[in-house]
Length: 93
Image (tube, rainbow, N blue to C red):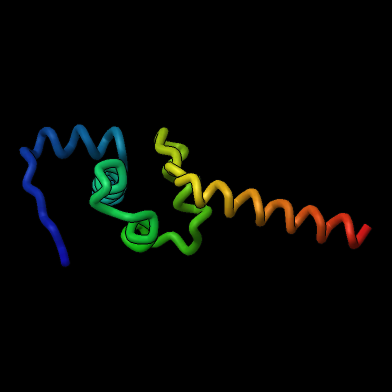
């Protein structure tokens, strides 16, 4: 789907002067607000912006002051994963 917006030319020129790639900046703003409001998931943000990895999305969101809101079960899973990785690393040493 394509979305078009109309701006007065002087405003469009001013925005282009500040942001150079106005279409990309607009798309990023849409993705950020979509994620902030819960309208878009992390995976959808990745697809909209053409990122290949989740890490790229996390970096993009972090750069814009948005941090992933982990659930308690996700935190527990991260802890278990880190513990397994540390055990594996220690076993190899």
